[in-house]
Length: 116
Image (tube, rainbow, N blue to C red):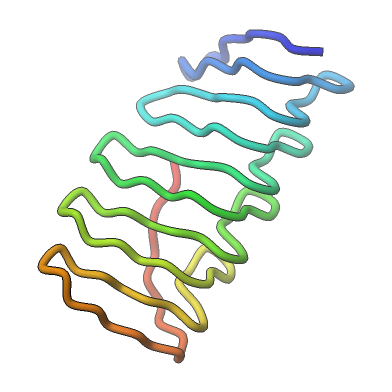
């Protein structure tokens, strides 16, 4: 069942509901926007998140965190492609800087990103 709802935090959701929870494909908007799969009110599966500063993440989610393969596009034009674990960049990855240079790494780095 597809439904539209507005939450007290001014977020608007349009998408599938099951047992009163956001399950399946949906779009949620607040200052940013998430479009993709949800499970038990959490981002889960494939989805895209765009933040007010212009940062965009497209990729895999598990229990409301980035986990698996994904691409992060920065407002300055640089692009990170690679693995995510526990909402952090992890494993094999490629960073293409706006200048066009590439930086490949395979060791984990801790880069935190606040998801709103």
